[in-house]
Every structure is written in structure tokens, then in C-alpha cells.
Image (tube, rainbow, N blue to C red):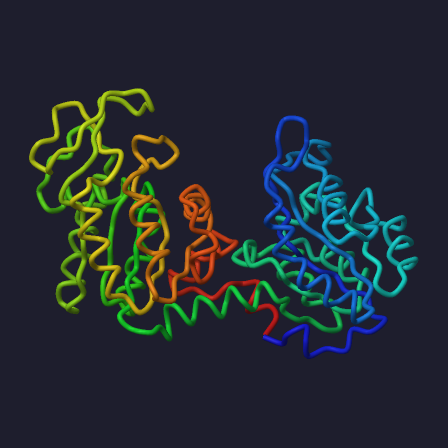
Length: 391
């Protein structure tokens, strides 16, 4: 990829695709501005280089056109506050009125476009819509790793019609952190995989066997692996159609000499409820009708011991229902161990980033990815369409 650092941007108009898909409350106020903060380094750099900035993003999943609750205007206001500079706002992302606003920009000035997904053509990667976006700029910059696994107009389509394309700082960091942690890691490489479903991470599990020295599997997805080992997990969530696949993955890991660690004890409950009665049991002690909602302390201790020897750690997926306090201990213990390790540590986004924040370790790991789906896409060994489009 060509970096934006390698381009003379002085006086040029740059279309910067960012990911400002921000959490909002019912009053339309931003509840977490980290995705805006993650772009400030690039925006400040380009302002200093006297570029003209057109910032574009999607927000939420509007259906059937414009929906004010998905407007990016609050993001423009927040960006202005963080920069302590004016940020103009366009009521649309294409059209003559928007073109006039872009043409009126002076060096170092910023215009944020309205939600790209107010046009269905964005997700459809419509070429005419992509051309209309490209007409707004001299240079296209992708700084939105979190959507770079999408083949959409503002991610891939626009690159066919702009004079020049480049990667922004955040995209560069994300891609580099993946290669540093997975394809060229300091050994041993320990991967911690959790979350709810094997199906959502099956390709990642299979691909990671090419690289890892130790694979730790927790969360609800571990139940399917336990079932493949003959454990009756009672009312716990499993994917029965993937028991054979889980067995094959464990056999493949054994053939390659990879340590694959599963829970040996569990925190179980009668109901999926924060107030439900719970207890810690070994695998052969799960009461009828009860379900596993966290790994137990002995499992956590085994996982921590494996992490202690790591040169590189990749963590994607919590160990239990961390949103409920009584089922958060496993995730907290693993998070603390990762934070205390001297290894290069990468946290895959989405729920894992949220878990890292709740566990208070965001400042103690080497890198937290901003894109859950895109990070998983790379863990599966796939090339991101948004990255390929820049090459």
C-alpha cells in the first residue's frame, strides 16, 4: 500500500474514509468517541500539510434512505471539539450542493459528509455512486480498517475513479500489527479465542493452526470442543453440527504439536440471568438443566500459565458472559495476565475490545484493533478488499 505520507497533499482535496460508526444514546449523544480520537493523528497531520479534508463515514444501518437518528452531525460537532477547529457539515454526501461546499474549502479546512448509508448504493458498491464520491477529491485515503473487509462504494469502488489512493495511519497500524503478531511473531505465539460460536470463527481457527504454538479456547465456543471430547455440557450452548469439525481441529493441532487448551472447570448457572444461582464445577459435575457461562478458576489458571511463556499474544473473544459481573471472572483473569505479560499483545476488536475496556487493560496491551470483523477476516487468512483496492 502507498502511505498518505508518501503523497504531496499541499492544497489537494482528500476524501478520507473513516469509521465513525459510533455508539449513541436515545437522545442522539455520542457515548464513546474513541473511533474519532483514533483518527486525530491523521487529521492533524493533514491539516499541518495544508490539505483540504472531506471526511466520510457510515453510521448504523439506516433502511430506505435518510433517518435523522443516524445522522453524522453529532460526530462533526465532537470532532470539532476535539480538534478545537471548525468542522463544516454537509447534509448529503453527493450532489451539487455538496460539491459547492467542497470547492469552498480552504487549505487545512474540514468538511464532514452526511451518512454514506443514507444511499443504498453505498452498500451495493454502485459504480455511479462511487464516481460521484470520487468527483469530490484529488486523493482517496482509506483510514477505516473496521470496514475494509467490505466491498462497498466508499471502500473499494471509489478507488477505480480517483487519481491517487493511499492508506491512512490507522489502516497502516492495523495491518502492520496483524503481520507483526501473526505472520511474523516473536515466538511462542499464543492465541486466545473465545466468544459464542465456533461457526463465526471456524475459518480463523483453521488458519491460525499454521502459525500458533498454543491455542486457548474459552467462552461458549469451548462447549462444542468439550462435546467433541465426550463431555455432556447439559444445557450449555453448543453447535451440534460442528462437533466433528471441532474434533478435526483438535486432531490437526495434535499432529502439528500445538498445545490446544480447553476449560477443565466451569461456572454454571440455572438460567442465562445475572441473578441466577451459579456454582463452579468440574466437567463431569454439571447439574442437569444448567449451562456454562464462564470458565472456572482452574481453567483460568491453566490459561494464565500458558500466557506467561508467550512472546506474542493475540486475543479474540471473551471467556464468558463478561457483561454480567458474576460471569466475568474468567475474562478478567485472562485480561490481567495479558496486560501483565511482556509479550507483544494484540486485542481483536468488537466484544474483545469492549471486554478489555471493562477489565481496565486498554492502556496495558500493545495494540487494540478498531475492527472486529476486519480483524477476524485477516485471522482467516483473507486479504481485505479495502486494502487490496489500494495496491
